[in-house]
Length: 411
Image 1 (cartoon, rainbow, N blue to C red):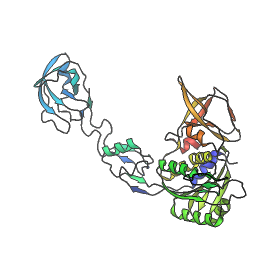
Image 2 (image 1 turned 30 degrees about the horizontal axis):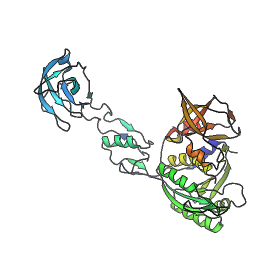
Image 3 (image 1 turned 120 degrees about the vertical axis):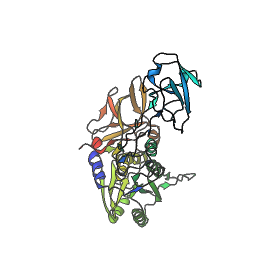
Image 4 (image 1 turned 120 degrees about the horizontal axis):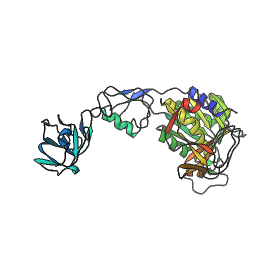
């Protein structure tokens, strides 16, 4: 069996980066920057008030209460026309430019809110309630580096510096299909004996779209060599990546093996992991092919460990793998020491500790335990058992990616 990290490295080495193109901020959500973003100006672009109140010279209010002359009223969007001299103040709204001569803002609650004079009732130091120019982003600084995957806050920052069309790697197009005569669509009402509804395509489609991919769904492909060959060829011509589920195990009717071998260069691996030990990977006429197992939990685990990092790599991301944390095992976790095992786990808090326990049955067909899980409790190959009360590593598959290739795989 291939060690998990070796298999993951082989997959990443085979992926090529997608081309870059400018996108609107709305289009760029979830995509990855193809170049560094340098601020053309500071943020804020000018010193301004952090609250509604009165702009003052701090040296004028060292003893309170004190009465100052209000010489101007500056709402947000307006510009002060007068400078503050000794004994004066300017009424100012949040976001309005700080007038010359002022070095602090007294919030309105600490005054009598008066005009043409105001009584100041609190002493504030220089800099209080003032947002300095460039205090968030300095002009000319590198705001985000290439490889950053853009989330809503990133897009807000780009908007603040006028980068309305960031250069990003385009979305990958992923062709998916399920294989097997036993499968019927989720819309099927009464099931005939021997038939099951296809859960893999809905699971994969949701996971891929969450990642930002464009999904082309080729549906359920029967165990027929000619149909499978034709569908695979069409998918390889129309997708950046082809993903199949089922037909990569050792069964007599796993026809996908022979068809993949006929169409391209594909290897069938036994990976030292559980679930998702059987795995196919290769190329169909230059298009990467991921042959995932048929069991639904295996499909999701293989997606998380192979397909998701590979697509992020194609998109140019620096961080490819989910974040990890540590919990205390809430029960004995006995696993196969020859494999890295991904236990579907719920995570609860006991004081300052996180406690992980199985979320349900761990068979690879038990999808409900995956749906109820908060994370994978990961037991590395060679370890076998984590005793109750001992530390266990968590892979937070409901959280964004947080680890680079080097951090996850070493080297």
